[in-house]
Amino acid sequence: MPLLEIDNLSVSVVHDAIETPLVRGISYEVSTGEILALVGESGSGKSVSSLAIMGLLASALRVKHGSIKFEGHDLLVQSDEQMRQIRGRDISMVFQEPMTSLNPVRNIGSQIMESIEENLGLTRKQAKTRAIDLLKEVGVADAERRLKQYPHHFSGGMRQRVMIAIALAADPKLIIADEPTTALDVTIQAQILDLMSRICREHGTAMILITHNLGIVARYAQRVNVMYGGRIVEAGRARDLYAAPRHPYTEGLLQSVPRLDQDRSIPLRPIQGSPADPFAEISGCRFHPRCPYAEPICRSKAPEFEGGLACHFPLSQSAKEAV
Image 1 (cartoon, rainbow, N blue to C red):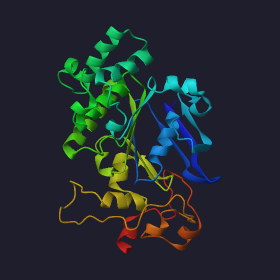
Image 2: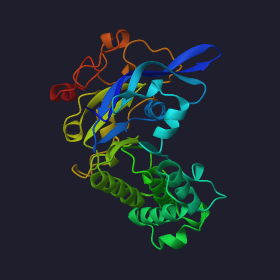
Image 3: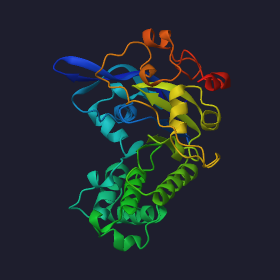
Image 4: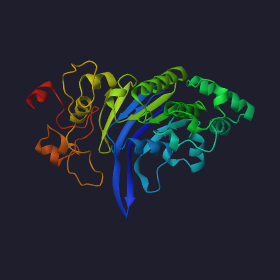
């Protein structure tokens, strides 16, 4: 049985009594110890679907239909108290910008220990010992002294390590990492992702890695779900998706980032146009206004998601050469 199973999940935003779908019937699974990447441009529905898993949707957002099963139990029917116990203990989240998540007027130690005491029921002395061990595990030197310091004493990379320590406090089974390296330079990005990958291997922890950059997940994820316009448009093993993308959007994402296995003289090709506006009415495939391969049927009929793909005309070498 999968650790996490999402089936036909749809989430809408309500404004002036009008509902607009932001997530449109996505389904996927995550197994124990697996790293699954959710990839796509801003507005594709990655973060909204993950906040639904955590039960942290804003008041204007609501789940329209579908299920989110964690260890066989549907999270959507759990009470607020039950979800509060699940968050942190079984499922934790690492957010994009740690300075918006860490309390600037509380020292780092109190913020890590709070999660430990709440979820594990340890004494304050035991919680302090575990907090020191966690900081050491995530690569923070002089951990005991650092417990007394405040977020502004830490660099961006170190603050993100603190957030990872908090996420690990109760030894969760699943970590959702929402753009955890966006605000960091490329060297620190690699260090953070290496750290999270090692933690998953050593603890058997599953992870959903949310990012807009296909380039940074090639080394870390076993499987990738590519999202566009609130839907999963392509899903598969990372190595297969990188070697032979089948959806034009996936191809566009890959062509817009540098690759070490390609000639440096080959220019990058950004995807033309702008991401789909969730409030705009678009008939057919939501990617068709930006797709270089679009045919009339793409403008009139939305493709079904079958065999890990939602596209009327899967890419082939001949199709690429024809454009």
